Amino acid sequence: MKYTYEQLAKMIDHSLLHPTMTDQELEDGCRLAAKYGVASVCIKPYAVKRAAELLKGTGVFVGAVIGFPHGNSRTESKRYETELACRDGAVEIDMVINLGKALSGDWDYVERDVQAVCDEAHGRGAKVKVIFENDYLTKGGAGLSGDDFKKRLCQLCERAGADWVKTSSGYGFVKQADGSYNYKGATEHDLALMRASVSPKVQVKAAGGVRDLDGLIQVRDLGGSRCGATATAAMLDEYRRREAAEKAGTHTETSSPVLGAGGY
Image (cartoon, rainbow, N blue to C red):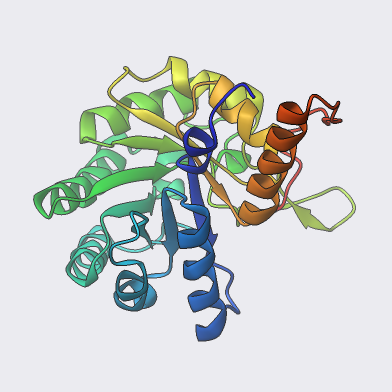
């Protein structure tokens, strides 16, 4: 195998963010994360305290989303939400930028918004991942092309103190020509672009559209260090299957990875 089990498992932020998630589903998800030895669970703020209790001593971090999923909260609300999450046991924070302000070209506002969360989190020993929602940015804005817009956001987030830049929330649905709503999430193009737009001290996280082991491996190949996923068990069970087949000297089929196919 190209990477070890631990290298790939410790890329996964197991996503427990669906709007209808019950308390039992949250607890089952935390136990699954511990069983597979992933990097973290990514959960809603109200659930942080319970997740921290369940995951104590497992080596799995607790991460909370802030201003999720659309980033529209006031900066002080995001800061306070971060404070509460950290007090409850979160050690990673996934915040959403204010997309409307970014597309309006109010870069100072966006940078202050990100910095407020970073300062609060870092002061409490937590790290920050900043979510762009790239599906909304394909046409660019504020006089910039889509790629130049994303590059500027990467540079802004690094100045503000971000530890990661992140492609998507997994819930950035865009209206399609047929009237339905869908999204691509992480794409090969965006991951490569974002990796090239920040220094080595800032990491890159993929989210949305990575649903199988080959997609996870592709994220790592492109320089991503974390990946939001709900298909954790399927990905890592497939790793064990291939690993066993390799040790037995038998051939195992692999599929072509496709990023940005939708579905968190």
